Length: 328
Ligand code: NAX
Image (cartoon, rainbow, N blue to C red):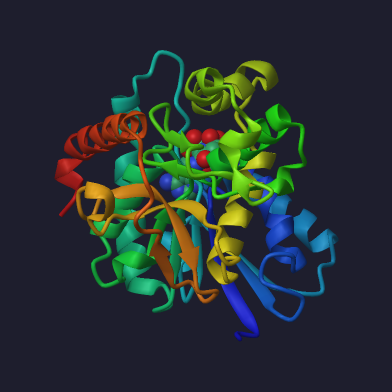
């Protein structure tokens, strides 16, 4: 077990950055015996704000926080890191199409992929949160061929957590009763939150929630549109819940998955379930507790589920085509 860990966070002066940094430094992610160095990357124009964030981190007096590095250079921020949480990217502005966003943000992940390959520790785990996170992870991975592909992932844990919360409410149980909730595909409005294989208190979810129309209709829509609903209610996008999900994502990799359960993350497909090899696709996964993961095999998928998975797969293929010139 390592006694210290270096964690890069990009977009560290942003809203998710602000919510995640104290939690990374507090010991609640890597444990009470692991010292943490935070290596924070921002755009030059946000370095002032980042200094303010660093002052606050100092003022938290976290005993485990060994150091804070602030930089607007990826090569500095990624030097020797064991984890790289790629959160920074440009937000979608009014009237912007998804393809425009993909084209805007793609180049960021070319440069960051190359810098990670050149500077990060050999065991680096790269977690992409900045949207469109699946395709951005693909770009970073393809520009860092020296890093094994299974060290890249994109975050769909917020979707899983949102699904569990809605299902728990519907069933009138605590959220801890929910297991085996899988998110398939893209972190976007085409993602498929699968309840066919989910369980409540160890029994098939469909025994407790018999309203199939809701499960295949409003439930899926609520999860797919939850990000937009939060923007419209709060005036800005999910930050606390996104930071929390990123922490759950990291913890899921470094903790052995409880027997029989799984967690969701978007990882390079190995062809499982007929998904194109190499696409960054969200699957149900188990971890060995040391960042080694496996895609859960052999889950039964209904025709309804297969159709949804096909749609999210097609969207990821289309996104890949938009950034083809960045996938060297
Ligand atoms: P903010 O706009 O508050 O912060 C983003 C920060 O990134 C800014 O401080 C900006 O200066 C910085 N930045 C931009 N380009 C950068 C670059 N090239 N290098 C380093 N820093 C850079 O956004 P925030 O609310 O923190 O969201 C960050 C990203 O997370 C967005 O792309 C957002 O869409 C995405 N999200 C992803 C989620 C997921 O489940 N995968 C959910 C939440 C969130 O929407």
